[in-house]
Image 1: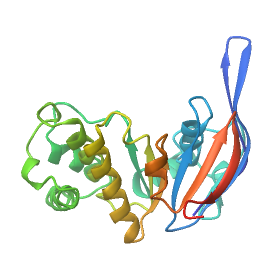
Image 2 (image 1 turned 90 degrees about the vertical axis):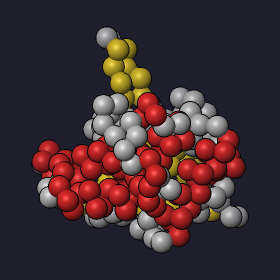
Image 3 (image 1 turned 60 degrees about the vertical axis):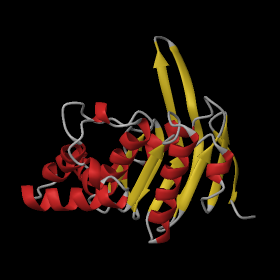
Image 4 (image 1 turned 90 degrees about the horizontal axis):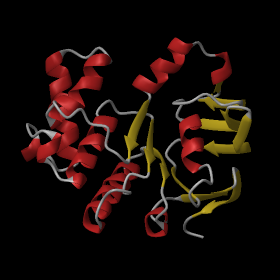
Length: 226
C-alpha cells in the first residue's frame, strides 16, 4: 500500500540544517495496523507526515500503491490525500463554528458528494464512533474524547484506504483513550489499514506491528505479538 525508500527529511533554520529522517526504508501492506514509537524528537511524526503526503521529503521517495510520488503532479497528490487517506490529529482540528455533523460532512462535500449523500455518510460515521446523540453539538459542547471521535468519524466517512493517526490519545484521559483505541481496533478488524504514532506502549501492543525509532532511524520493526 505505502512504501518509503531511503527517505530523508531536513529542516533549515538560517544556515543550520537539521536532518530529522536519515534514510528510512519502510513498507506498510494493505490491512496492517502499524504503531510508530520513539522518544520525543525521534522523527516519528515527521515520518508519518511524509508517508501521508502532508509534507515533501528532502530525499528518497514515497510510493503509494506502487506509484512514485516524485512522478505525481501536485493535483494527483491532493487527490490521494482527499480521496484515499484519512487523518486523525492529537489536537482534533475541528472547525469550532460547525456542529459535529457539519465537521464530518465538510470533507465529503469537498470530494463532490451531494449534500444529502454527505449527510448520510457523515451520520453513519458518527454512529460508528458512538456519537449519534451528539450530531448537532458544537466542538465546545463536547468533551476531548468526543471531539477526537468526531475527528475519527471525519477521517473514515469516505472509507479511506489508509488512516493516519498522530498521537490520537495524547490529550485524552485514560477512559477516552481506551475508547479511541477500541475504535481503531474495530476498524482494523474489518480491514482498515492504519498507521499510528503513539508514545503509549499499551496502545501500541494492540496493533499488529511496532516500528521503533530513534534519532531519525528505525531501530526495530517487529510484530507486536512476538
